[in-house]
Length: 462
Image (tube, rainbow, N blue to C red; front, side, top):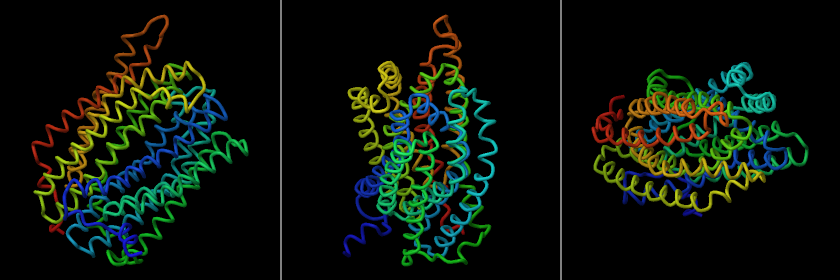
């Protein structure tokens, strides 16, 4: 029993072989990230099979707006993960305790804001995006249910980030697997059994996420050997929430940039019609799985770098960066090959419409090589974020996503207009994404080698 409990305990990443520590930490998180994608993927598969392609399009069209309004949580989670990792690595219990307590309080405040604002702006945003009338109401219902139940999503993601900052990626995985199984079961019951349609998948997700959040809170409450969690620690203290916001807001802003770019591109996608919208949903669902290793290693590198920078072990940061990036690139290369060979089988899971499967596979081939470039971007950005430098990744995202991707997408669409494609060829949105990913990897590597991130650690300056 002792050995089992140790698996779910905080882990010190400042000792041991760097690549082994990174892989040990990343594997449970990778499984967890894949499981989390089953939330949206299960939604898409079930509504696509039981309701139809338009319902599939509705779930996908809701995603950019959903992502835009949850950037508050992305910021809190990122700042929390960095602070927790550095304070844990430096063995500063009081600072660690206040950081975790303030995360809980800020998440409550942000949840209330989203619960109020989300339902108000949903329909105006959908209209602004030229969402087809045939899927408008489904999109709105899906989003409103999600926003009303946003607290579960918020607390799971932020508290799981805290657990990972402590080096415990296994607990977050266990809780997520439980809620994923529940989510799939509820999806089938609500949609296939009760005929609730698109609102049913939103309700299933909200319930499952709420349970995973409760499990995270219970776990943290039991970790008294690492930090203190009481009412005193929940009180907002300026030195902590200001630092958390300085670290987290650039990442939240980065997510907002991505979401705004997605909204701008979604408007272009919507102009191509329901078939292309449904194709985009399928490709993005497969893309989410393909991108998981990259995000996983990026998050692992953030925790690894944060703990070692907090412990003043820069030599381990350098070694771990090389090891982690090589592993991430290797994994992404394998995934790219698998997508090219077996992608059509994946597309067929979502729909029985052959034309839609063929179109989705065509678009996926455009993106495939970009996953290798993203492995480099995420790994190096993760190290920079772990050091406390969240501004550099933000600016790179701003340049590649807004200044590069959106104009390229609309430019290609404009130049390829024809009688057959009056609004341009639908490949434009996917080509622009590949260009953005490739340039992002090049620019990130250049800024990483300049090395300004090495001086961003804050532990010892409190």
